[in-house]
Image (cartoon, rainbow, N blue to C red; front, side):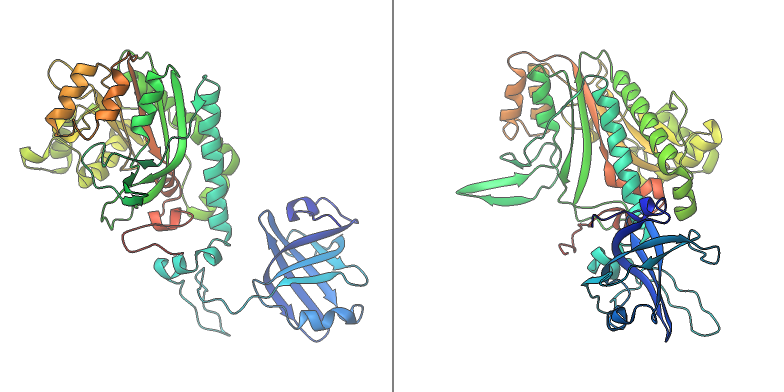
Length: 447
């Protein structure tokens, strides 16, 4: 018999169907057994009267929580069943099959509150849960998080496809050690060394020189940074785009704010209520346009309102503390969760950012809920200028192959990248370790 998802099974009252999934819980008494079965769509109670099904008793005695079973039976409405008001009664004969028996679980996935009959049990720590991530991911909250992430990425794609963007897949093995002087992962590549790409930036721009005009990519990104914060990871999923024939980096900002507004609207419509219930976080669809402030002005505002000061030598870039404070400032000033920050020091920006006549990079950071989620910019597309800016940072020889992209004509263009995992983290109010399918950090290569 073909399997029926539990969400669909609840519409099949009186029909014989088969459901399959993990055993969420089992109560096995002398006369009755009650199994709550869980699949990706929901839960269903299976009620077994042992007198009517003696052939199932040996199987019921074997089943443990988190075992995988298949059950064939008929769905019956029952007002006494708290779970959805329905229960499944097994069919005659071989109506229950054990697909896989589970050992006792090595982690606690949720806090277990104390009762009169038993003490409370604390949830396992995040690192222990990551050791058994495949078990931890079975919770409703984790599965909801990835449903929301799937909707988010699908909405990002939908928005761009409707605006004539092409999807590309750039190589992750590259022959150049760096695009900006940052540390990269070195790997053996036959008779020479190769490196894992820290972004698809060079190849996005190659696509502009190829006349593709509008492209995006969703794929892995690698950063060899020994960072142990709650928002950094050595491998993550990036959503990047680039597009041609822009007049200013503000065209890039406009594209991003419209893209994110579309995506968050889609997530809110599909899962907003569930996210609020599960994580206590409201999915807020932002208003357009997003607030914009220069870096210099932001530091002045943070000092005036909150007494936040820095040495002048450190004011060319955003500190983590300033990012966090900027959320408070933008909410109090504009009632908005997003903030564009512009006019960074050239020393703090990549060599391929276009600069104005005063040497100011034509780009921005986008801060959401006090965390930077994007660095975007208009790129320098003029070969001679780009070559000089690469030489200024000592990278001209390292990026020679990249500079060649611009020798034969290239339109003005710009773009940005988003970290899918970081957006998921902020959407659900979690740390990065809890927000990724499998986390990678300086001390984490398994599972």
